[in-house]
Image (cartoon, rainbow, N blue to C red):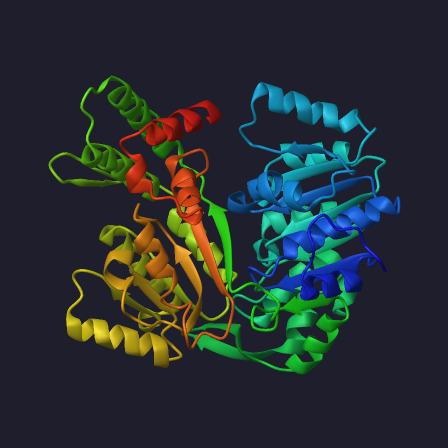
Length: 484
């Protein structure tokens, strides 16, 4: 098949599209950074060209779904399609609600509806979807499909029920197995339960899991103690899934950049608005504003975005936030070792605790100002040579220079500092001689905040420190104020 592309695909993306373009059900098991979103968009465009669909529903987690509207679709969808794009929000404004209602009856153009997966636990979303897709031929895609791996979860049941009415279905994830091979069942059953050959989760479990009866006092229960027939499972998946890892996708660029959005909690939002307005007044009215004063205000805003406030007397007040949760979701999508850079030692300790709790205390090492030289040497050695040590958590000021961390090809910037040199140096800890894979860099950002502008400036190689005495910071604050 010949396809029309807006952006030229890599060879592995073209192969995935060739395999999937006309299939009723297909899984893109493509590692983060391999461009599975583009493949889905190209597939939607082809199905529209063939007059096989008139609507697409894209379901994704909160930290991902806005990226489809703001980046993936505008970048990759050919302009001649010119669809109407609708965004489902739990806290939609009056105008946004009005547009959604109009989308139910407006059928003169192709429609794309983007929803967050969490909305499926509500009563409103499924009802709206039924009206939106009534008498339409639609494709339903679930991005990061491990969000429906729990067969007992309410949202999994709701999505599977709604999926029964879709003409075409797609799932996308870099790591379809996060805990065990049994994670595959509900993801594949969403596509079609016949694909794996088992209509029941329990019969699927009986075929591929080793069950042992355990006793605890007078109570007995069955426990999964191992797995079997995995070669058979692999062969079944090959019939309807395309797998690509960064290692296999040799045509990828040396560095791959992406962002993951972190939604502010209501408490964070309230504090951020207050602090932002104060900063705007300070910058507009201050006659002699110095660079250190501006940087301190940016620092306080950034700490707030990470989930805590620091008072004038140095007391730290922690706020409810989603940053670590999103980081853990990103890690679930990654294979292999991961470097995590965070500006603040407070966060480094929190990150270490969360990783230790989930993956074991031996899975993580830290490297920052309080780390002794002996422990620093040990941390590098363990990360480079011990297969069980998966995470290296550091700040760029301490760990960003002079060390080699080529065991990792995944990097998460939990938070950035404002120093371009620190960013460039920290990126190159794993992107250097000895690295044989493309390196993926993921920045965690809170939308409509200075987070976005800081990352954008760093990636555009702008020197933020040089802008602080001009109008740049004030412009950042005012832009985010208008968007909010």
